[in-house]
Structure formats: structure tokens, C-alpha cells
Amino acid sequence: MIVTQKQIGENTALLADTVPKTWRYLLDHADRLGARGSVIYRGKPRFSVFGVGAYTFAPWKVAISGFYKSLNFMKVGPMDNKPVVLDDTLYFLPCQEETEADFIMALVRSPAFTELLGAMVFNDEKRPITAELLKRVSLERVADKLGKIEEYHAFTQTAATGAPSPQAGRRSVVIADH
Image (cartoon, rainbow, N blue to C red):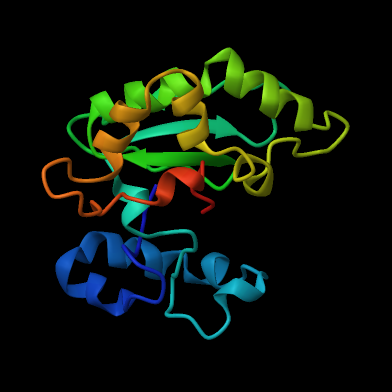
């Protein structure tokens, strides 16, 4: 998969100099790529993609499919020392370290989390798992219920200073919507 940007709106013309073979491929398929009908591409640089940001390139992710009827979270790690980029049918929480991903996996696979989230899933929907649904459950409260609140805080703020880490606050938003 070609990911042409690291941030939404980033200038894709720079690819011509940095990855000329990829740029040639994009130009060779410009008619097809330019025919994408979604309004999200209007007014954006040529060959833009959507749903990219720092979270896209996090080395570890805890992911779930929006289409599955079951709550099957998976830990996704790097392949060949490169982050795996997920498509827009999945929701995920980006993690910087495997230990963080393991901790999140323990929370989302706990009975406290799965029973609560499972009660809110409507299996008749085409996409029963949604970002809005996932955002309704606080991982901080789940960690507290499981007696893991100190570990939760260790991942979300600097213990020595009490100052928020770059990841602080995102745990109430369970899964990144990309």
C-alpha cells in the first residue's frame, strides 16, 4: 500500500524528488486515482489519502474491525521493523510500546469491558462496531475497576512530575477513528 502523506493536507508533489519510482507509479495510475468520487479529496493535494496522522504510524496498535459482530480486539505490531498501516474498516488505539499494547489488550479483553461494550452493540447494523460506540467506554474506569489504575496512570502521565505525557487524555477516547 502506498501512503502518500504523514499528515492530512501534506504536499504530495514532494514525492517526485524523494521517491521517484513511487511518483512515476502514481502518475501512471493518475486517471484511476483522480476518479475517486469522495468529497474528502476535493481541494486536497494530488494523490491525497485520508485518515493519516501520527497515530497511523504508531509501532503498536490495538485494533478491532468495524464489521465483525464479535468483540475481537487484536494486537498489531511492526513487520520488518515498520509500523503496520490499517485501513478504514478498523478502529484502533495507537501504542508506542508493546507493553502499552499488552496493557490495553488486558483492559479491552476483560469481562468488565466486553460485557459493557457487548450490551451496546447492535448486531443488525452493517458496521456494528463504531468509533462512537467505542468512545462511550472509558478505559480509565475499566482500569480502576480491575485494580490497575496505577498502571493506567503510568501510561498516561509522567509519574515523577505528574505532568501529562504526550499520550495523556487519549484513553477516554478508546479507539482512534481514522
